[in-house]
Image (cartoon, rainbow, N blue to C red; front, side):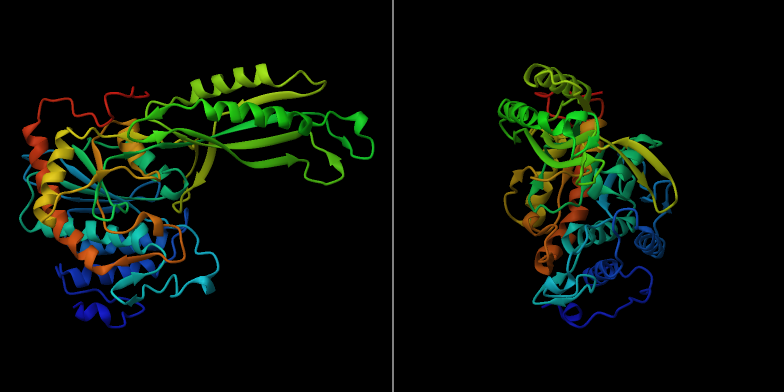
Length: 431
């Protein structure tokens, strides 16, 4: 059925004849991307490969930005707001390559699947988005079709955060290439990390009376966190917010020293409208009530901060918070997308939400740009050593994407003058 795809793909794909817009060529491009490892902060080679492809396909704009994102554009006729297609270039580590059935960096096609790290998370869908925009370029769409292929999505979405903050003009809508198994996804919980630090006084472990051991406060901290977790709010669609203690670290790290500082990391899955400052204050007040006063011991709650260094050399410290978002089912963009997929796939479309986080937290959760997701691939295969993309499903997405873009642009034209913010009206928008 797949002809060329069932053949062994070359280790390096030569530049195809200009404007080969076939599905087979698209999947060859996806395989080529898989063969370029691109962990967060190491996306340079794959970014340059994508820029080359955009230029070969005739994009009107193809470049990288300060953070190392790939930014591209197909200029439309100007009658409709722009639609932005978004996928990320970075992937998670493969672990032990021997645990994979196929070489994780091989881009192997076998049994009707494209195998390897990034096959469905998300280099396969990224390739489909590239070729969807290129196919529309022949007819010049009603409005611009932009692409943003971001860095550091797997570590909080720094690339998309930077892109949203530096946009010259807002798109009318964003379509994400995260796996949906051809469903239409419209939101997810946000992700945040806070830290609880307990400060004490260091001393030699042979003479503990000379120090103040911060570990003695940990049981009270953990009990307070369990209480906080039990009281988290719940959304009828997105589910319950969660608070989970994960990593405990201490300094100094020597086993024969009473530490002077212990840090407990909290993984938080939060609902749209969550505010970091309010959460820090709430947790601090709870700990002040639940942790007894201990001589020499002080408890502090810290907001999540992280420093990222791009492959371009740019370094930036920022919050590691990725907001949640939820598009209402009656939103014009959601309704148009469902209608387009019904036409393209020949069946009713399931509308649901992702279990994991995406760059949509920044585009929609922070900036209110209507954001949806559509792509082939099963979420449960993400970050596993079984990652693969079913080619039959990928072909359906390949055929559906141009229809989806046209219908979303048409809906944006029809809704001009309306405040098309993306976050569900039941939930307050932070910022």
